[in-house]
Length: 66
Image (cartoon, rainbow, N blue to C red):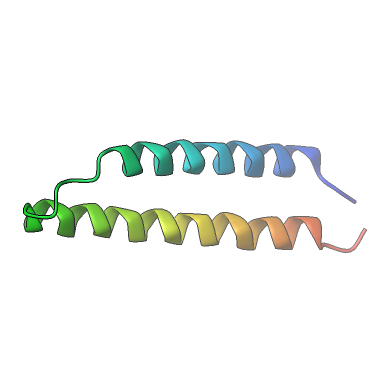
């Protein structure tokens, strides 16, 4: 059975991650600011990991037997 609260939570998490990703892209520092770029890339990797967790949860939720 599809649990609506779980799906709603995943939709909200996905939307928040997408908004965070867009904000992150807009804040890309210039190439000559190597420390700032290093931190920016690290933040991008954290967003990638969050995306993967949300994807894994969606698969578990949506592929669960009825």
